[in-house]
Length: 187
Ligand code: CUA
Image 1 (tube, helix red, strand yellow):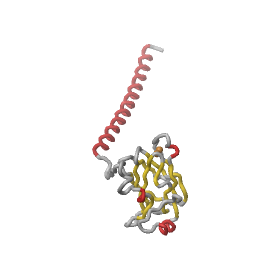
Image 2 (tube, protein in one colour):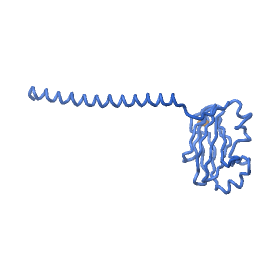
Image 3 (tube, protein in one colour):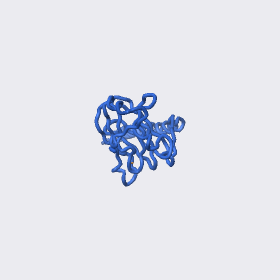
């Protein structure tokens, strides 16, 4: 290779390296900008409507006493499931909801962070002590699902699950007399 040839190929190589250097620098700048943006965004706009609850007294009085857990048709006609998670079970152990109906879940934990997912549906939430988690889901198909805890919560985590039954709407409404809490726990 002649002297000039080597100079040319060196120039080509360093130009290519500079281009890659610029691309990598732009990617780093973009990622750092995203981190700063999301950090500032979450810090300046905390999630709305945070509901807190005292995990030490929730079993004694208020919304999450044992007699108030399960599925109820509220005065306004809304179907609401109330549940409590604790190491290592859910209360109630078996939940029943009507199909094709928006169902609002309200849940919390008495001890550590738990969570649940209903079978392969998109009903999925974390239950954090001190906070009430709530979301609404509609189940199209009737049938029974497993509802496992999906946050590692201790040695009994793998054995922590409930059953979840979706029944036809008329069947549910026939059983749900006003104010009564429904579960599918066998008594
Ligand atoms: Cu509760 Cu894992």
